[in-house]
Image 1 (cartoon, rainbow, N blue to C red):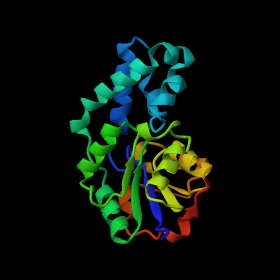
Image 2 (cartoon, rainbow, N blue to C red):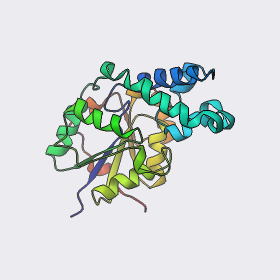
Image 3 (cartoon, one colour):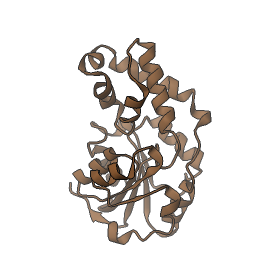
Image 4 (tube, one colour):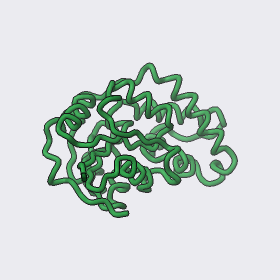
Length: 221
C-alpha cells in the first residue's frame, strides 16, 4: 500500500531552535579561537554539521578542528535545550497529518539525540512513523540522502517535504520532490521561492488542514 508521506524537517520547522544552533556553533568556533560572525553561521543552519564547518570557516579549519568543533557544538547546544520550544502549530500539524492517514516522518540530518528530544518536546511519539538523524546518512542536506533513508523507513514512494531553508528545498528537488517552506527558520520568502519552494507559508500552523495531494510526487531513487 502506497501511503503518502510527509517528510518534516525539525529545526526551524517544528521547533524554534535555529538561533540556538547558531549560538552553539558560534561558541564552539570561539572555543577554538576561530572567528566567524554569528550571521554567517545562521545562513548555514539547516546544512549538516559535516558541511557547515567548511562552508563558514574553510577547508583548513575543517581539517584541523572539524570533529572537535562538532563535538563542542553538541555540548553547547545541549546546554541550551531547556530554552528550545515547539513552534506555533507544529504539534497540531503532526496530529492533523497522522489523523488524515498520511505517514509522518521527521527527516532531520541533526544529531540523533536532538531529533528524539524534539519528538519528546512535541509529544508526537505515537504519531510519527519514523525519525532520522545525521547517523543515518552519508551526506547531509543539501544532499538528499536523509530523505531517501526516511522514505525507505516507511517504504514510501509518493511524498512531499516541509522545511525552512533553501537546503531543504534543494534536497527535495534532487529526488524530484516538492518542498513546502516555512518562514520560521529565518530565511526570507523571496529566498525560499527563488530556491524553488512549491509553497511558502509563515509557520507550521498555516499547514494544518492543507490539501497535500497536489504536492505529492514520486521520489526518484
